[in-house]
Every structure is written in structure tokens, then in C-alpha cells.
Length: 407
Ligand SMILES: Cc1cc2nc3c(=O)[nH]c(=O)nc-3n(C[C@H](O)[C@H](O)[C@H](O)COP(=O)(O)O)c2cc1C
Image (cartoon, rainbow, N blue to C red):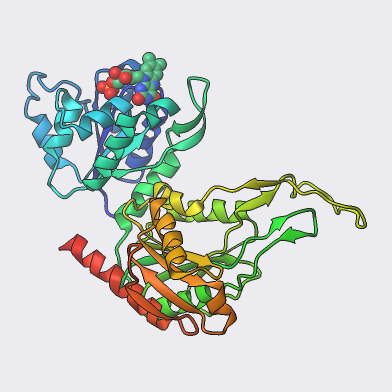
């Protein structure tokens, strides 16, 4: 955040309150004004004196405090952004259901509709994070335009391990800045395109790969870059690379692709992700650790299934409204079977558009594709020899969605 902001920090009852106090000192150090509002439970975890000392202002925790009865409106009007951190499961569910029964929840609603960014930084036990009401409340708040930051995975204060742990303060500051500074400067915004095929090690020198060359993804990256999009290409080290223009990140194995894909979408605001990489469905167990195996003997490989990355892109994404485009390759499928394969990809809930092609059409040199927005009938058919037509159509589709959002 280059310009100094008025930040309203709203704290609720979590062990992470102590960690969140360092946000106040860091924001003040960077020249921002910080005011703190607390729920009654937050007061059990961190003292008023600490919060007042760090922010330089009295804490607002009682809607009816004499002399401050209009602060629930005045503070809401003063703020340039609201950050609920740590945000308890209770508070998330209250925000999503219109409850305004204390200083924090009343302020939250009092700021609504002013067009200022409202952030939630969740902190809770894994089971509370996965509680159905909490999941629904998070989805609801995101639909209303609230920025819900992800949680970290790891050891929780309760002794369990898993999702729900609050992000580190440095990550919170970075992610909030990234959202605030994001301007869709490029026509059609920012796109991440994955390409090429994964290589799953059997031992130190051998791997299971696939025939993907990465050519389509590289051409798509070039074409989208030329049309003015800000393009990042996340491609296999051995794949055909885009020419100068797109930012390039490389991967080799499934694990590297998974880690770099989720890191990219959680660190930066992408408008579009095109998942064109040919991702291994299975990986050999223990392949990385094995030295060079000796030859001349029968070998039995144990293969473990990999998760479907495409269905988790949105949940890892800093931009919860990111649009995801998947590729579906079939081998000699009838058009009915191909439509069913496309329908299965849509049913995973992770994609907005699917590009389908079939091995047979690649073999006979046509490399035809069909673009689906639902499994029924394709919205575009063409050949991938030159992906310009596909790039143009994807960009047109993306821009029309962005215009609808800003209308
Ligand atoms: C030691 C302790 C730690 C807690 N940590 C959390 C937490 O991290 N996240 C959470 O949602 N609730 C946590 N709770 C439970 C909340 O404090 C409790 O649900 C409270 O009613 C939340 O109120 P508030 O949302 O108004 O602050 C914790 C409770 C205790 C006693």
C-alpha cells in the first residue's frame, strides 16, 4: 500500500490474537493509521493496554460506552479498509447471517456498501474451519465481495494438525497489499497458463512421462500476451516454451507443479487460469528416494493416485472469482463419450470452460478442438495448429465477464 490508509482491525476470540498484534505495529511503522475494535472474547486473549499502546488509540469494544455511542458509524466511515483478524468461526458465521449484536459486528455492517475492501483472516481449529455452516458462510461472504484470506496448514494451538491456522502476519500484509494494489491494467487481466507434461520419477534417472509437448500452451501464452493480457506460463522444463513476453515458471514433477500452481494463485490475483498441463494421474511410490535401479530383473511398480489439481485451483486462489479453463483429451472417443468426459470434468466443480480434443484428431494431423461452456454443445470448434482463434475467443469471453462485474 503506497498511500497511507486508515485501517480498522477487528479482533475476535482466538489464541491467534497475540500474533495479530504485530500487524498493528507493522502497519503503524509503515505510516498507516490503525484503530482496533474487539469482541468481548478477544478481550480474554489480549489486553486493551497492549492494543491501545500499539495503535495509539482507545479500543472500541462496547457499542454503548458513554461518549462513544456513535462510534459504530463514525469508525465505519473513517476506515479505508476493514480487516477482521483473527476472525473466529463465530464471527464469520455472524457476518454471513446479518447478526449485529456487539461493537465488531455492528461496525462491520455499518461499513457495508461504502465500497471499501473488507477482509477476513480466519483462525480456528480444523474442524471448526470445515464445519458446514462455516464453509457456507465463507462462500456467502466471498459471493458478496468480501476478501476471505486462506488459512495455513500446520500445528494448531489445540495440538491437532491441519487447515485453519492463521496466516503469518507478513503473509497477511502481503496478501492484503496484493489485493489493494491489483488493477486490471491488462486487457482481460492476468492469466496463468500451465503446459507440458509431468515426469514422475521411478528412480534417480527414470521417470513416467507422457507425450505432451506443451506446444498448445506455449502458443496460447504467446497469443494471449500479444492480445494484451498479463501472462504467466507455468510449464514443464522439457516442454516447448513461449517466446519472449510471458513470465515463465518451470516444473518437472507432479509435486512441483502442484506446489508452484497453488503458490502462484494464492500469491497473485489471477483473473483466469488455463490448465493445459498433462498431469500424471498416478506417481510411483518412493520414486524420488530410490537410487538407480539395476537392470535385467523384473520390476513391480506401485503407483499411488494423485489428487485432481484443477478442482482445487479456486479454493487456493487469492481471487475467489478466478475463472478456470480445463483441457480434456480423449482417445478415439465417440462424440457421445467425449461429451460425457467433458461433463465429468464440469461435474468436478472446478472449471468454467473445457477445451476438448481427441488423440485420433491429433494423430491424423488435424488437431481439432471444441470449446465447451457446458457439456451439451460446443461454443467454438477449430484446429489447434494455430491457437489464435481459441485465444481470441477466450479473451473475448473473459473481457465480457469482467465488464459484467464492473457494470
Ligand atoms: C483458548 C481458546 C482458544 C480459542 N481459539 C479459537 C480460535 O482460534 N478460533 C475460533 O474460532 N474460536 C476459538 N475459540 C472459541 C471462541 O473464543 C468462542 O467461540 C467465542 O465465543 C468467540 O467469540 P467472538 O467471535 O465474539 O470473539 C477459543 C477459545 C478458547 C478458550
